[in-house]
Amino acid sequence: MKFLNDRSALETVEAAITLPIAILVMLATINLGLVVFGQQAVQAAARHGARMGSVAQRCAPCYAVSEARAAIETAAIIQHGDVTILAPGGRAGSLLKIRVTGEVPNFFGGLSAIFPGLPEGPFQLRAEATFRQEGW
Image (cartoon, rainbow, N blue to C red):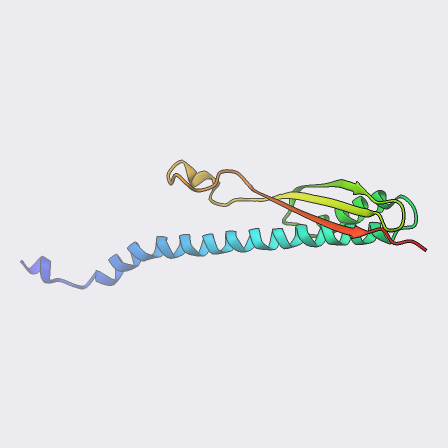
């Protein structure tokens, strides 16, 4: 009966129970932050590429692709970045539309076997931007 009334290790047991949960919540928050940062980087690269292509005097798609790729490379978190021209622009007033895609690593990809419902593999990100071709 003395063992049941002994409370000397209660704090250790509580820490052993709550510490893994706290670490899991912290890692999930970091993972979500990386996904949000990656999505903003992809959107910024698409806008920058479309804007630079829209003010180019010749070969607007060439400028748009090169500027978007340069912008996506500066955001080091994006993996396998790709740039696609959806509408090439060209003449003044025509539309230049660009799509930028990429991936952000998923820290919980290996846990999907233990916890069904968690996403497997990296997170796929995509953004599009449209600008009118300027000319003078």
